[in-house]
Image (cartoon, rainbow, N blue to C red):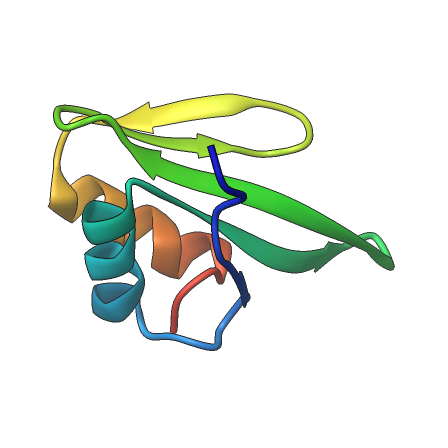
Length: 77
């Protein structure tokens, strides 16, 4: 499998980011946390949305939940 595309946090708005996750299945978001760069994998398996962060995995059952997470975490504007 090819590496998923990478975008910088805040580069896309939440709706654009969500559309890419649904279209491509997974994307990586480059973000900064505690003065270090990290990548978060955002993915969708057809039913559930997942956020794989360096410290935890969390999931969302709907697009609206995922959209709220994208905004709250600063991944999408």
